[in-house]
Image 1 (spheres, rainbow, N blue to C red):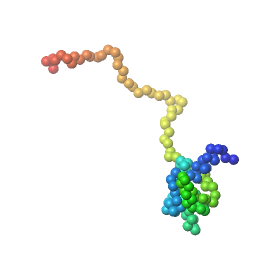
Image 2: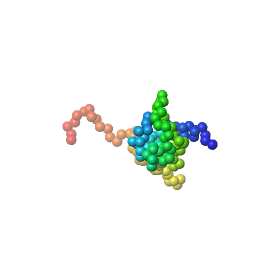
Image 3: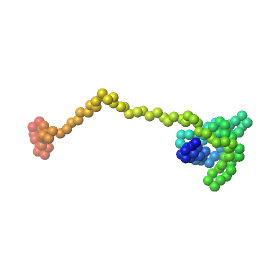
Image 4: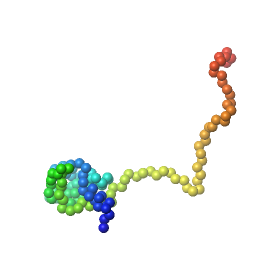
Length: 128
């Protein structure tokens, strides 16, 4: 059984954010079409008979039905997302300290409250 979120994800996997006609898909093949599920495109290819295949096996049975919000491609089965979706780019983890390591603070200069020397920049002098 699928949860409501899984059903919504599966439905959104069947929606492309841009309008694609059957001829557009033929020109894309072999290639990918973005879906409304981030990082999970649908692979477009052509079969031995020249038909467009989605994810290698789903055929478009009735192409290019115009709707008020796009174009519908009637398919012969549910498009199943790949089992192993592409892995996101690796992220370099932040360095971590072992429990036995201590953090050594960076040395900083702090004013002591008493200046070492005072310089009078207002009175000119002739001495070098």
